[in-house]
Length: 381
Figure 1 (cartoon, rainbow, N blue to C red):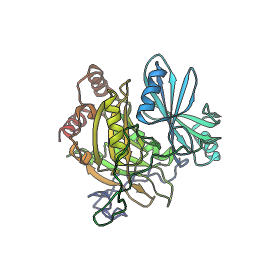
Figure 2 (figure 1 turned 90 degrees about the horizontal axis):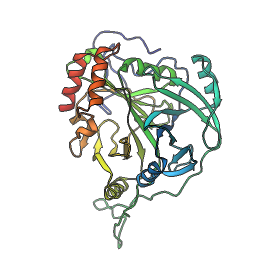
Figure 3 (figure 1 turned 135 degrees about the vertical axis):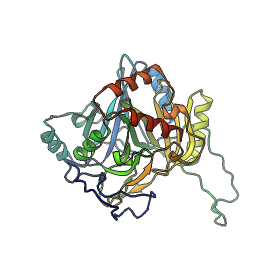
Figure 4 (figure 1 turned 90 degrees about the vertical axis):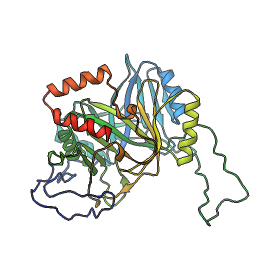
């Protein structure tokens, strides 16, 4: 379980204003578990269902994925880095997100996880084989933890451009002409989820999968009620890990918000974005640079309205970096770039969104009118 909280005054931590103006106050959530069941090493892949695999494959290639395997019922997508595929899309009656699969550091971790959760270790239906444990998080979303057998080999990379800086002239007698082609995906970076039971879900990922928090966000005037968003990384000890592999925020809905895929550099993001725009896809928000995580970003909608992000140049933290704390606001989502759109924020009052709000306010969860008004205020701030 998470460490006990002690109430009182400010406490000095290893935070040292490294990545946020504020660290934790005494008694606030520590952002890690004292004794987690296992410590996952990374995201392995995400699982979706869609009725039209041909259309899904066209977008996947335009967005920059490689094809790891294709059957009549399944489409496995990959990046250029060696390892596991980063997405599987199975043929289904409707378009929906199923859940994430996290990569276990060792095969024995699956046995330990199965014993602790009363689950079974089963064969994984992934190209190359492997083993998997299936779980449900407190939001009711399926979560799989896998240990793969055969690994995919590396593919050719999209090379970064050689840049000149001030008097450092590394490029002479040649021009810059980034090709107008898809951004070549290197790997799956992170997943963002919405949940009505934020604190329970957060503790589950820390206690069960051994993840640790990089940054917390709280609602203005409601810090004493605890955070409403967390950027969570894998605990790889002294080895630096992505600032967040998973991010979660409190909201009236449950499930997928967006997923992010690393590409080479800013030119890859921009030229790949022009390629997508020319083919009629919808940009949701970008290009810009985030605050939490520092990534260069560009968000797009696929034909099934799922949001996907190209990113580059993200922060890497080792295990000794403590969580930062900041107020949740739309202006605080980016250091530079265009204003966050209503589409990105999910602020359009669609019938489905209205239904989710009504269900959340009537249900047994962490959403109430004060939280809802605080979230609406943050979306406008």
